[in-house]
Image (cartoon, rainbow, N blue to C red; front, top):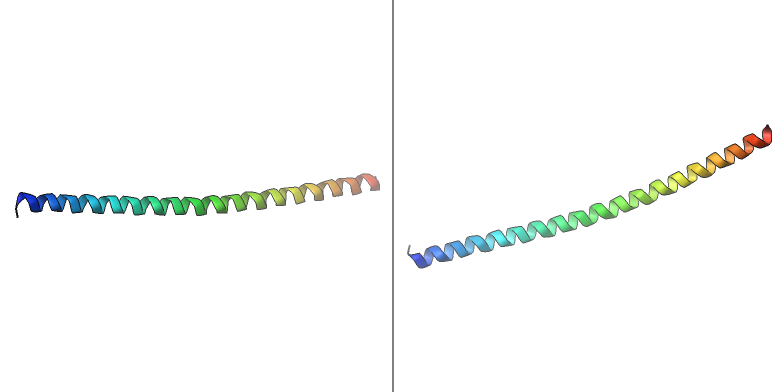
Length: 68
């Protein structure tokens, strides 16, 4: 194994490292996008539920005031 072969091995090693890093970054980006989409959906559902609870509370308070 000569110096030229060692240089090829180092090049192959670095190319594998770069490909692995690129795959990791792509996976992280895809996962982050899915997480963000799920978090946005969760926030929307929480806001909708909060609004429904506020409306129900207001309605109950109005009914209670009418009865009093």
